[in-house]
Image 1 (cartoon, rainbow, N blue to C red):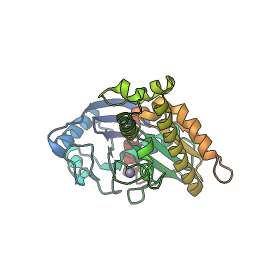
Image 2: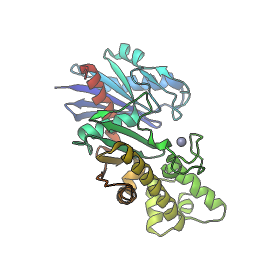
Image 3: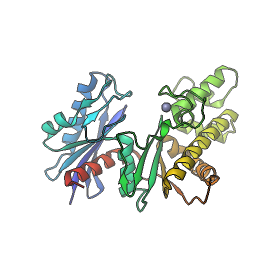
Image 4: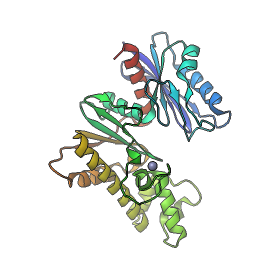
Length: 311
Ligand SMILES: [Zn+2]
């Protein structure tokens, strides 16, 4: 029996799970404090962990937004957490407060590890998990092991798919995220709407955030701009996957995140088509993720248990 706690720290919510032998036994969540800086967020993490702690638990994993230097125990900088503008050691203070070893992992890597161990990636040896949400993230499993590198492995959102193309949220140019991230698609739709190319996307969203469900509605109603923007998104993801496939000869791509949840089959088919056009014989499975919102927390627990076992 292995019992661990995993906590996924997101920009809007903190979600924790108690994991017993790979199964989610209990879930606890709260809103991420938007005032009070890192201190308030750390306090909320402690409270979430305390609600899940049982005497059998042997490790706590934190899924952290933003890059994490492996083994550092540090989280940040994280643009979606107020005031978290630098790396801060959280493994130390959380460990002494909670009395268990604490491991910090990048959230998208943790989610990839979870899908590989207990979700849509089971049985795969070389796998890419691709998260299409507000931004675009990824995680890489090679020879059955999560590939961390120095902390950047799997960051597929910022590979260049269009030299000289659209500006990315990170400041770079032509990155995948600038074509396939929900926020970037929204920015582009609003820009084109403002310049006179009317689109249902903006008419339906008004001033509110353009949700992924709205992409589906506009597509179904035959909106031209929605068709173009989402066609570009699929093409960009397919091109990036095809390049990575050629370098790494993966056997599976797992697709998850808010945009993929709503538009899954559309992306799966598009990626199969684009990636299949590349060089050589490509034998690549493209499947949808299975763990939903719990993936980051489950993966953080799985990886923390690995570390505690010395695996
Ligand atoms: Zn970028």
